[in-house]
Length: 432
Ligand SMILES: Nc1nc2c(ncn2[C@@H]2O[C@H](COP(=O)(O)OP(=O)(O)OP(=O)(O)O)[C@@H](O)[C@H]2O)c(=O)[nH]1
Image (cartoon, rainbow, N blue to C red; front, side, top):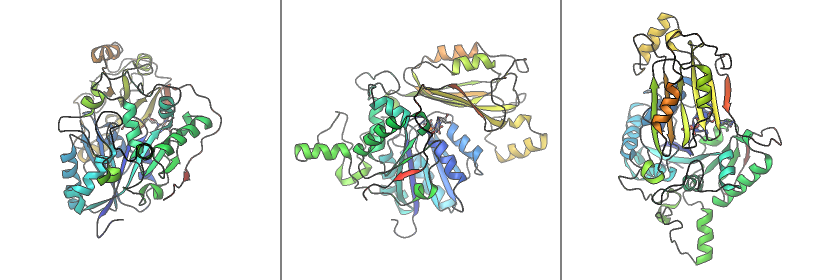
């Protein structure tokens, strides 16, 4: 794989909310002796993923976890990515770099950076792993309308998000079919067939909550010349015509094999290409638990993905995290707020985390939610949440909210047929 002293890199891609951060956290807790550096890219201005990774691992943002926020590393943040990874290799020694791309990134261009830029001297690509939300994939390519994917259709200049889903699979060396628990055996088999048709020869594993085998994920899986199913079919059909399948530019440059030829120009980004935007709702007051559950369990369809922290009345010592992806929405108790810990612990924590946004009265208690989607009515959503704000210390019954650290409660869940208990870690090696 890597000639000389290069550090192996695994690029982790996948759609918004597919389970990339969950998988990364699983990996970091099952990494054994490996020293893994991670770089987390989030398209919102608040890097929720980097915080969650840092919180769940021994790594700290700025130390083991590097964050690149407010954009996508496959286009507008490419230079930042290059600078960050070159600096990382200079400042620290580690065994492996895992790059978690934002949910709207195309993994090919991210991997190509490690081959063509200054980073190539220090790194070698070990693999492109794409996390697929099996539920979303089944809905999109099953009986659903692929263009609809997760939000309304684009307006001509905007590509359907399903294109991105396909591209993420097409460039993968390893496809992780996640959310196994949310699909039936028949749905899973259909998803697997579709994935194998899109990317023959890729390794495919099925997981629940990203419980992938660390050895497999970090192994040398990369094959830049692996066939892309649709392209092979097209070539067989037309004698090698590489015409554009969708009129949106060629993603199939043979010279670069699996890296794909990125058709974004400097001004293109998630918004221009897919119509995806994000906004942050931030308040220093607790939410009424029932009201918060009602709004956050029933977000408008324009929201593709939402995540962040919740300050909830009636449970003011608990730092809740919230996560919505498509039809699923969960609240989890992450543990106590720093502000509700003993003073000496607060001091130590704050010294080690100078980036923590601290309020004189409320400490780190806050509601900070990132909403990602298409044409979200931001004012209406903010007003819906504002209507449930209470004064700090107001009494409320947060009985339905989880309290034990790590405990999670569903505010919304997809209806599904359950034929079997989840199978995890079942791997099938493709023909390479
Ligand atoms: N039911 C179910 N939920 C899952 C599974 N894996 C992850 N989730 C949930 O899906 C949501 C999204 O997971 P994340 O790991 O944050 O997804 P992500 O891909 O990092 O999200 P973005 O970075 O925003 O694109 C969270 O609420 C997770 O708890 C799974 O296997 N089954």
